[in-house]
Length: 248
Image (cartoon, one colour):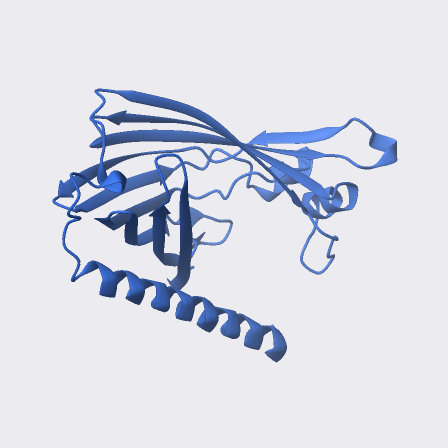
């Protein structure tokens, strides 16, 4: 990596961390001295204790694959980039909540790459990604809400170079992944302030020569939500992600 790219990456890191620090400081300063709202109840802190809520969902995203780069792509990745500039990601999920305290969730991603090659009109490469499942628990203490969750991702998607070459698509990372998250929410009608921390690591994966794993990553999200009324709310969210070390 040249000096210019390194400088840009360092600059973006400092800017992101600076923005997070400002928002986090704002949350802490305003949350600490504030007492409960003097109205009958806080709109942003009211929760109905439904016995059971089951929420299925689907999310679809599309992004430009960009121009192929022969210096960084090879085999299936290079051929896919040459034939298509569009990647479609779909995620099927289900969320089960019991009395707004216990939470179970799972998701299954799917990747599709339609071919834009005239000779292969109508052809599309598709594969399932890495599914995940997890559980969470929330606690309420006066005007505070504390949430903790754990998520485990399974290496179900295509990641092996030989298989990706044969099927012309790469949809997984090949790693078992563990994610731990916790957040602290302060309700002050009509504002809710959130500060959180997340940690993610992978289980070493066997390679042809030895093992490999992805860097241990830590994220620090923060958010401010303003409830204009019972139907409209505005939120500002920012997160800083950093990799602490890498082990091969």
